[in-house]
Length: 499
Image (cartoon, rainbow, N blue to C red; front, side, top):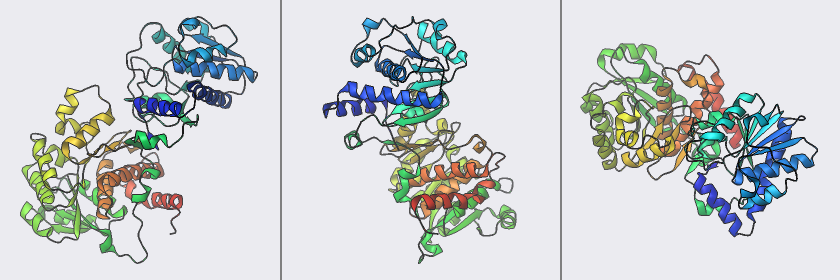
């Protein structure tokens, strides 16, 4: 589940070599893994390897030799002169006993499979000239493409396309995934990703201490709340959700339903009096209370059993919304801020961040989408426009003192201490009105049960994506809470929980 930047992966290689495994042994294992994947992809027909000058090209030479030894028809196109190769790639090229073809797109021909071993994960400059033409030719060829480590043209740490990139059918990476396997647009170029064991021991992670993981259940299993047979609803927390006025009540109800389905023992919708009848008529298990002002809100929160709040969905962009946020923070309630609550601080985001830090309670989650993120973090967005989503969210969490959940098809969650998760399980039909409101509620429901903010946000994102998968195409936001029981059952089965 750990995700390694290119720098961290290089360190894993160095630690393994320092422990006694030759670098060429790692290259041999990598090339053999590529050959295995190639055999799985195409059972017959010629294979073309497009190799670069670095270790990625060396992996390609090893794969070519292994495939030839198994009786496959293989050719190699090399970016540079064979005698200009360096390091372990020299040894790999010596294992290829046949000529290499000139670096010419026309040399590709009509193979059954193309192995892309041109550039590795460390590419950090735009692709130009002959390599640019070769990548375009590979993409236009029509043959399936197997990429080594990452599709050539993708930056391994940011996932950015460096001018042009291979569109792979499958990608074989080594030891652990890189951010670009999960972040967009890189993930769109990878196809199916298989992670190969090439002899790097997992204990190198103890020294590297990676701060990023894929958002999968193994990353947060120990924090996942499971109701106990002797428990009761008051032990599972009480979420309050702030509703907007009569014309803007639906978003808050979606959040409330999400919180209840996520396991909160009780959920109360705090409604303006002019919307009370509308909200009460539409809710059953969710309770409704009339609250118009921050003073009434504070009086209600004097009951310490009301331990988590959602403010933002349909709340309105206003001074009232800001006052409600400051009140919840002053009273140290677990808090999810979404939508209008974020935009309400667009003119003075530092006031929000100061209030979060002054609360001395880290259980605060901010849930912007890409349109809302610059309203709070304009300096991060504008000062470094080329930074990856992962880096931007980390900076935002450190700046704000809160856990930041930046929504999207590659949702990133980051904590102020630098920990981060990247989710890759959201289906395209999750992009629908109100889905984010449900996510805010799910996250608050987990906070109410005592789950720390970083884990609550990560669990919420994963379950949100899985609920969308369960509902399937045609999803609308109202469907998400209703399929949560199926997601819980799958998790309980995976974790070995009796139910």
